[in-house]
Length: 402
Image 1 (spheres, rainbow, N blue to C red):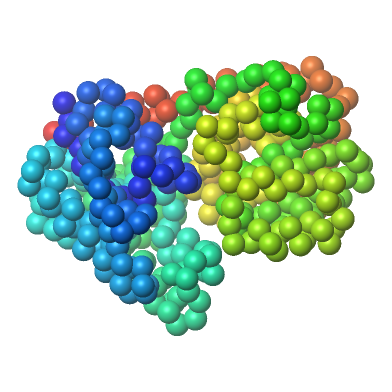
Image 2 (cartoon, rainbow, N blue to C red; image 1 turned 30 degrees about the vertical axis):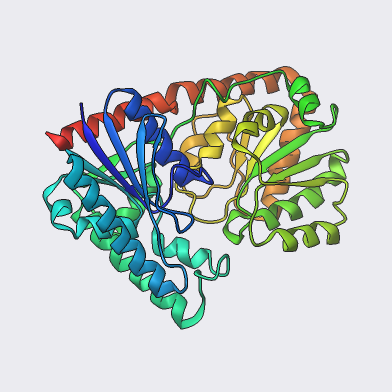
């Protein structure tokens, strides 16, 4: 049995995005294999509960959100103190660290320096911070924003250089690690993200649409994204304005929340897309499979920093084809399918050409569409199941513990 202490800036008790999903799937599946797993994470609120959750002990620490400086310092100190308490109480064989603030706090502690460690590099923290400017009051512009970026750069650089090994989810992320932080290939472990292939699976599309109250005969395009600038949703809306001229009954479903919802709704109205776009808001985790099953195609319009793309493999596992921009790790995932489901670039014109060709081709050749859906499912099963991913993670952690 492995005694594993996982330390993260996000909580597994609130799965709000890819980082939380990766953290929770890894921790829960390792616990089911008989390992003792404790997660120390930043709390969303001021409370700091210790909670057993599906076989995993979760200990959250509070942070001070009154300013960017207080937030950074309290995140570092809180992670260090909480991890220290867990290590004194029960010990650990290996540390698994996610994100730089909590990771730095633990790696700088005496216990953190003694234990072998694996740092999961989801995406470059300073670049993510810059791209999220204005999303919250902690994501600042101007001098404060530049200082925040510099601090995150320094902290993440120390984390990836001090950790025994660095885990990435894609070759794209491995290349970023080498270029940004000088991490040699020998210290990088590539284990992709995954999908629960039992939960996300093909189903009768008409039945899924009836359950969700969606129209039966219209071509449905789905995307699930944070409504933020780097996700490229404005470009997708402009592309849709072109596509509807050739496919007049097309309907785009946009799931997700974010600071740009008002701007995106205004853009859709200005493009006269009221009958062609629905903003779904937050899609509950339990409802996700049905939305994938109901769609004819999933679109990933990202314009920057797609370190893996869990939604991509969730759609594939559901038998739903994915069209994506050639950004980040998306070409690695979709490159196994033919013909290529990649747009030429991330521009509205390229998306419009690709989406129109897909929808018109599907209408002409329904059997070909079914064959493509089956190929999507096979790719998810053979390359991206969570069990396969956790096999690789478990082997790496056991090797580090030895």
